[in-house]
Image (cartoon, rainbow, N blue to C red; front, side, top):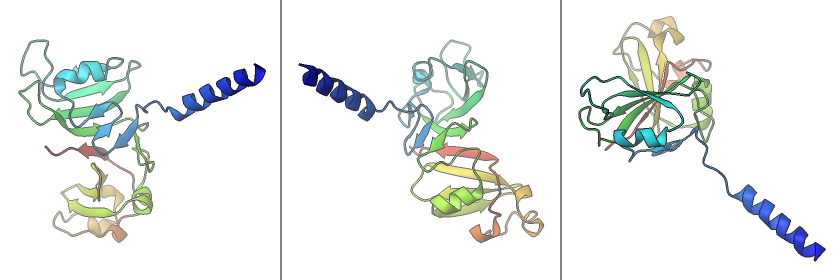
Length: 185
């Protein structure tokens, strides 16, 4: 009888440990926490039931969410900025996400607290685009892309928006201006 209780207790403990609760701050292809590439603006109140949702769009004065929104934790920290693929449709899916909170991380640990070295060590870069004041770095086989302010680059790379920048020219310690996710329709 005693052995049966011990075996039952061990089995229960193992099953609890093997059943992992989905981390609310994990970034993976097609999802970030409980938000997926199929989530509509209308579903945001359910997905973020424990957080505050602020609509940035004044398109429709009704209670229906639509357009860009920001998500804040109950303690007031800005978590995410969300943009749908159609600003006028509450049934539109979210397709662009800006990550503000550093607790959101990829399986390889990439977060807002990361540096360019973390990208170089863990990802293959699929492309780099330059703009007037930033470089955008796209990661192969990932929905994630990051923006680095050109102030983080050597001075000879800062002022020409048409300059092609090689990953070897970006300092290892360059921090992120933006950590973004894009889900194509």
